[in-house]
Length: 294
Image 1 (cartoon, rainbow, N blue to C red):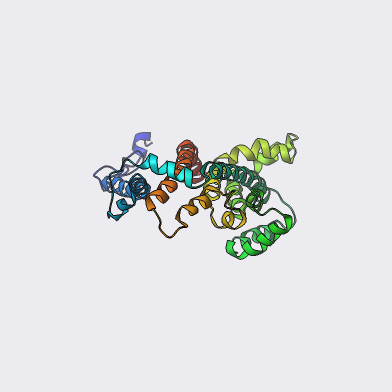
Image 2 (image 1 turned 90 degrees about the vertical axis):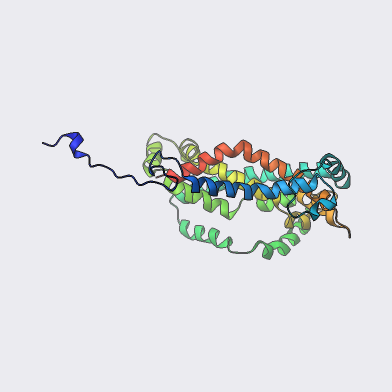
């Protein structure tokens, strides 16, 4: 009889690019660290360049690759605050992005769970219709949507920006694709056997499983709503703008001071950076959970 130690065939391990042994638990090689460093620098430099130009004068942008920040960022920021209704626009953007994010996450999770785990007539046809709406360009529906908002008397109000974005086809599709495999059907059947209704089953079974995907969807939805420019520019007035439309007023004249414009761009980016730092851990855990599900 062959012993347990003899039964195990020796496992050959190949060496990675950096000289280490490739496999589980091995450290990445020099090439991996080099590529990650290049991607990191390439991602950070545009923000840093905007800060450098925004902290200087309009002559700073004449330099090909400015690296050293100047000392005028505070003065330029004060100019931005005086030139546009910055704080009102900031409040509008926070309100719009927050309401849209909460609504999209809630409705998309409910719809995604229904399409993934409930059996009802016309389910596949409705899902195909939802996916088909993603193929329609957003610009194609702007004119009829504006006409509807004008008939309702909502033009110039925050509601005209929020209501059309309360739920998105991408959010429904994203949550459906995530939940279709991550929740076993046996778990739902066990909850029903225990006497739980549909809502109770969703809260106790579907919602905990959907939290990683909800975090990712919420982060991307907030970012999309925060940076949206075209629709708020059309439906809101210059006296009641979002942050992105307010920043466009900084370059509406014949002479554009790019140090002021880029200062405003940096100030508008800071809330997103804070959000990514705060939600980064949940975002990474959600991506890893989606990668190993099933």
